Length: 118
Image 1 (cartoon, rainbow, N blue to C red):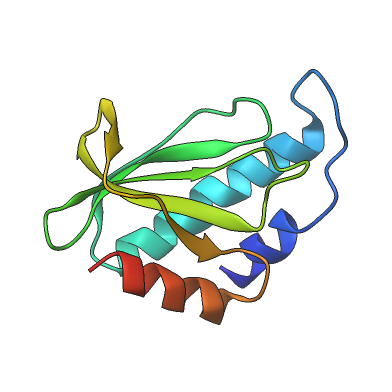
Image 2 (cartoon, rainbow, N blue to C red):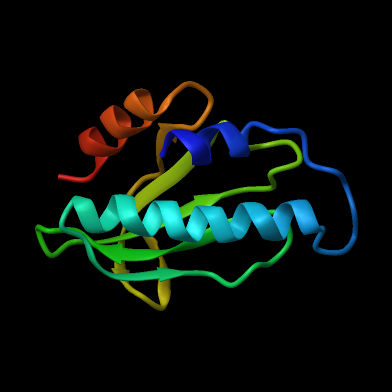
C-alpha cells in the first residue's frame, strides 16, 4: 500500500483523455488494493475499468457486508478514499460516506480502513 499511496500523491497531468500516468496508476491501484483487500479476507472484489482520473468499485468484507469505495479525480481530490456500505453491487447508495486517508502513509490508511470496515 505504501507504493500506491505515494503514487496517488503525485501531481497528475490534466487532460481530457486518459494519460499514460493515470493508466499506470490505475494498474498499480488495482493490483495493490486487490492484494490489500484479499489480505483482510475480502472477497468479490470489483474495481472499475480506467475511467477519467478516478477509481471505484465494490468488495464484500469478511463479515459479509458489501462496501462501495471511490477515489475521485486524482488531479485535485486524492487525499481520501470514500468507503460506505452498499446494498448490492449495482446500488451505489448505502450507508454514510466515511473517509480513509491517502495523504499520509499506509499505516494511517489501514487504521482508517479498519475503523470503517468491521
